[in-house]
Length: 97
Image (tube, rainbow, N blue to C red; front, side, top):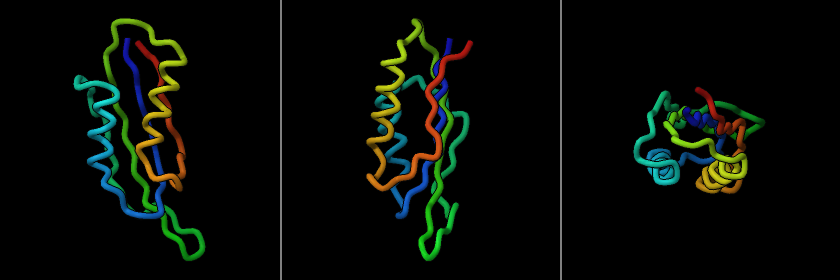
């Protein structure tokens, strides 16, 4: 069984996404597999404000089935790594086999 963590975020300022990814690995664990990474680039312009889009897809083997509460905790910890004004376009933390 695996946990798939997939997120897409929009920020008003350029962020140190590499540092955020390192902290995500600390949350999820060293044995995470990176399936895709999208480093910040201009992804949306609204009026005179531009937003940088970034994202990732990660997999991790798990030995037990985490409860929904544990998956929510992972999502919340990841959200908290981003600036407060970040638009969380999507953030999934799902189990699959």
